[in-house]
Image (cartoon, rainbow, N blue to C red):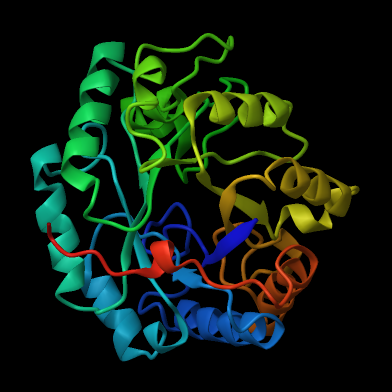
Amino acid sequence: MIEAVMLWNEPNNKSHWDFLIDPEWSRFAEMTKTAAGAIRAVNPNLPQVLGGISPIDPGFIGNMKGQGVLDHLDAVAVHGFPLDWNHWQINEWPAKLDEIRAVTDLPVWVSEVGVSTFGAEEVQEFGLSRTAELLTGRAPRIHWYSLFDLPRAWPATTRHKEAEGSSYYRHFYMGLIREDGTPKPAFHQFHRYAPEIGLCQWFHFQDHRLDEGVRRMRELGVTYLRTGLSWADYYREGALDWFDRQMEALAEFNVTVTFCFTPEHMGIEPHYTSPPKANEDFAEFCAEMVRRYAPAGAAPSAEALSPVGAG
């Protein structure tokens, strides 16, 4: 079932939103409010979450609050990778959540947290166990990123690609399962933390890993998942058939669906990070996906939206 929708992904990260076009995030704010209103018109009970931010920046959340965005939403979300990309230590997780709670009363989700095996698989084992200790009971949703390694033949979604050096290549080693399908050591530990911790797994267009992903999540005892339906993919041939197959395969899980990525022909610039030319175009895509996969009638998830204190 669809338990929530998320509007965009890492909007304050230059790999996912074009700062040069929108330095004050005013275009993003208006786009998000327009989309939230369109979704409410279709299903007023469906929880809506602000796209998970990376870096964790209370100033950005304050900006969204000041522009009225949070008035339209039910939760905010953060992403954190202190053992790979962030300039803070893993033990600072509770303090990072408190920074966001200081500027909003909305529930704070951790919609991506993970550790790569770029350096050593033992680091991921440690990171999983310590993350569970620090975050369980402190956030209503904790999505571990991710189930699968990114195949090396696929590009990671970053702006400068290989020029980023080792920071880029870490993207390919975030999974609990290697590209060849064999589990890493942390995979065998994950069941200890499910179902309190769920997964974030992006399934690419016609992703060959979908059925295996379902089987592996059952094996791990996972009950909730974050994934995406790409606005850019919507214009590919056979897109709705793929979306239908993906959502049917994931129906047994509590799914948060992320809507993001601008089709080249609908952006101010021809790039997936670009603000759209017309906010209504993104809003209509979101509304259509909700009509198709989360029509009115479903009750909101009390667990997912209940505020969680510092613990």
